[in-house]
Amino acid sequence: MKVLILPDAQAAVARAADIIADIVTKKPDAVLGLATGGTMLPLYDVLAQRHRDSGLSFAQTASFNLDEYIGLAPEHPCSYHYYMEDVFFRRVDIDPSRTHLPKGNTDDPHAASEAYEALIEEAGGIDLQLLGIGQNGHIGFNEPTASLGSRTRVKTLTDSTRRANQTYFASFDETPRYAITTGVATILDSRKCLLLATGAAKAEAVAKMIEGPLSAACPASALQLHARATIVLDRDAANALALMDYYETVHPEGQPSAFD
Ligand code: F6R
Picture (cartoon, rainbow, N blue to C red):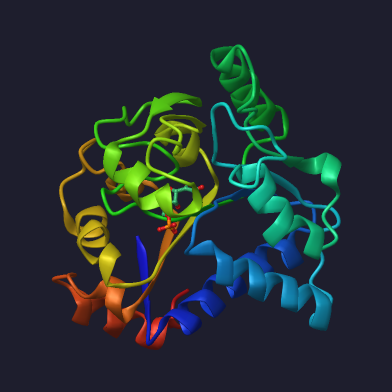
């Protein structure tokens, strides 16, 4: 794992944006795996800004989001379809026909999950998978105890995840219980992974992911198996890492090492 620790959230977001911009510039038809959530909002802002100000183009890229709530139509303001359209897709030049999210408003979420996994494969797999992390160590909506061999499927959300996401809904009861999420194995199949975490609330989960045992109890720890996983953190999110000095020696201020 490459662990990059930046002085603050703004610098961490800028570093993550650099990594995405680098892939898209070197491989304009890259397949991006995208994430939602609060952590990603400033990142999509920076990418949209770079599109506007520096011509960073997504015209040939394809995208596959990690997850979508079951039961929400794409037009629902709390759906991830809506989020992606609002915070990213409409602000850049990505071709809407090449953007994909799991279909949450369906009578057969199992079939929709299988179809989504097949679509990722048909697209040639994901070049760069962007990830956030839940306070309980989830990636996508792979909650603790999710199989490390899992593929896209229906998952029941934990109450702690529902509470964390409740802010977007009118009440806890209205916060969806189920989602379609790509699996841990789907994520591990990506050619590169980039996980961004900011803020003290993520410090414990980040430490378990990087330095804890490989365990379904912390699905993000599966990234220890990935040969090209980069973790971008601000100081607050890095705070519980035992080997912080080492990471900072290898990548001072989160910059590339001499051998990168
Ligand atoms: C969202 C996703 C989730 C979030 C995680 C962190 O597509 O896959 O794993 O990345 O729940 O969410 P925030 O950033 O809101 O703390």
